[in-house]
Length: 151
Image (cartoon, rainbow, N blue to C red; front, side, top):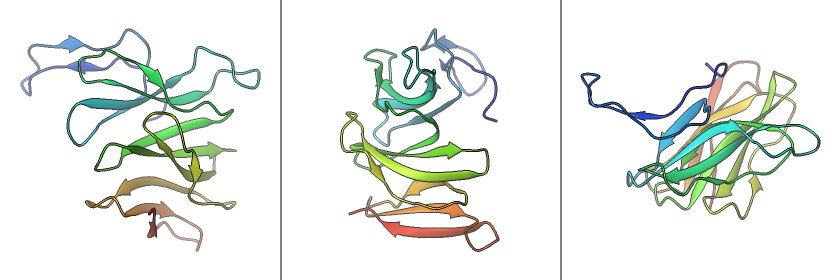
């Protein structure tokens, strides 16, 4: 779920050899396709628009070089790496039932809104070649899968 912060950890499939990567609270994490970096969601220590929002961060797979990627006054969820590791899509939620999909460079540049509307658009995933993005939307009354071009 989205509640409760946790730390990222490394461990073997049998639960042994646990190694913690962070000492900050995080709620969601995803590996880059090459396994060299992680994108994750955590509350920003810096106030943006007078509040601490959930933001997208990236770090190396060993826990070094933590960098905040997003800096807007809204909470972000569900990061997803592009296959080439240059961009991250994510969901921005507003008012609990309205959400839209955005994309940003892994370096924090080139923020782009990909969907717009008063319904839920989220749970995005890149196609294997990175040219399209699938996402779930209830814009027609039911939760359905949609695809859009991101090139």
